[in-house]
Image 1 (tube, rainbow, N blue to C red):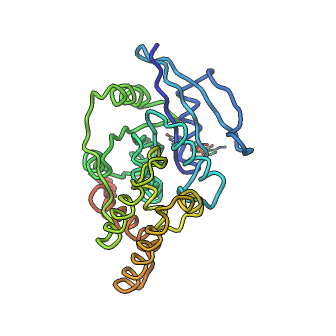
Image 2: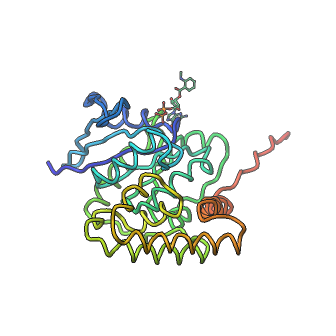
Length: 279
Ligand code: BGO
């Protein structure tokens, strides 16, 4: 059997453990993530001639360095490099859940969205333009109901076809405001001077530096190129302060929310309930 490594990421209460259970059934074990007391659920499912190994990552709303759950999640994505990351999204609460999605896009992981609780989406009369949302997120989206065990085969089909490179989709990058985008570009190029950093996604490191991320700061500070990067960061702060009266960190957060608002306006409509006819 060919093995495919899949990680489940998602907000708390998105139905991640329900999906994990529905997928892996009795093939589960529990351990700990290295160095922390956070439980690590691993399991597998054999499907279509593949053994799909699934890790259930801690539930998180974001990928900052401020909470152990968020650190464990992003470190896992960086160090263990799953073949595919399934972002389990709570369909009826799409807007809130997309914040994590935007950050997974920034990490440029191989992303697949499980639009979970789709039974609730339908019951509540919410219309989601899945095709258009796929275009905006630059990844495939599969509606699922972990509770009713619907969409699971389609999800696994997508895992295999993405792994085999059989369904292309145009990746999309979130556009930040021009001053931030050019700072990201400049810092990414500076980071490329350090071969040892080559194992990281440099664009992601650049975004995190602009966000004042402590962990990434401590990583990059050890390298000679830091002097130039610090100058670039200072310059970015001056520019965004001058134009927007806010620092790069706030600008980046605002741009993520702007992207999400746009996506919601384009893709999600509340259907008006049909009035009951009196005839
Ligand atoms: C309770 N559809 C629906 N309708 N519900 C779902 C789906 C789905 O596709 N998937 C999950 N749920 P977790 P995290 C509950 O436990 O997997 C429900 O944190 C209840 N419990 O059943 O735990 C799931 O791992 C009493 O709901 O999420 C669970 O991501 C009343 O979403 C909740 C109502 O799922 C969270 C619900 C005693």
